[in-house]
Image 1 (cartoon, helix red, strand yellow):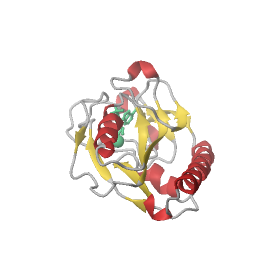
Image 2 (cartoon, rainbow, N blue to C red):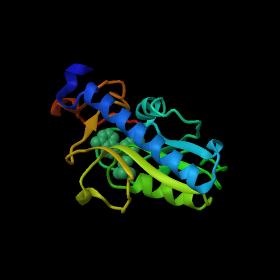
Image 3 (spheres, protein in one colour):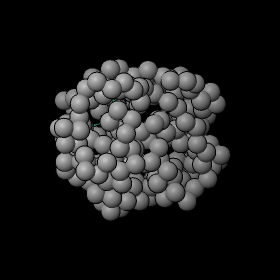
Image 4 (cartoon, rainbow, N blue to C red):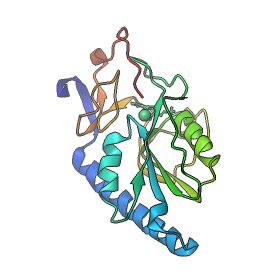
Length: 196
Ligand code: IMP
Ligand code: MG
């Protein structure tokens, strides 16, 4: 698996340091928000967008010394061997109890913006007390098909297809500890999938 990676873009130590910083920023801002609005910790809900945000969320939430709950949402946008978004589709149910909550939407990467644009729109309809968007990676604004403001961004990266630390190609490579670019020979059309 590691042999398929042509180049490491962000190594595991760099990721860990940045995730710890993001966790501290989020904890600080959420505590401030709760203090300001007279809110209770029970109101803090993290919503990871599966499957890509799984690894990032697992590390991120353990950096927050704060009472919080988790509600997952699944979206599919890169079916099979596609390296271009085919548009976001909700796969399964959206959490239904977000009214009055301080919601943090977490995703692995902001690319075309269609995934977070869709989830943000659906979540806003439930009238949460606040919504924050946190992504580990962000591609340049030129690739955006839908405008989305991410309040917390781990790293800005070039418009390249990356894998590792939760991000997949055709469902694989999510368990790579570093984030990297695949060798061209590892990217080949043909096999079917359907993973987000
Ligand atoms: P968007 O809807 O185009 O913003 O894409 C968001 C989703 O597409 C992410 O949650 C990822 O699952 C996937 N994605 C976007 N860019 C990449 C990439 O470079 N590698 C792997 N998955 C990606
Ligand atoms: Mg995803």
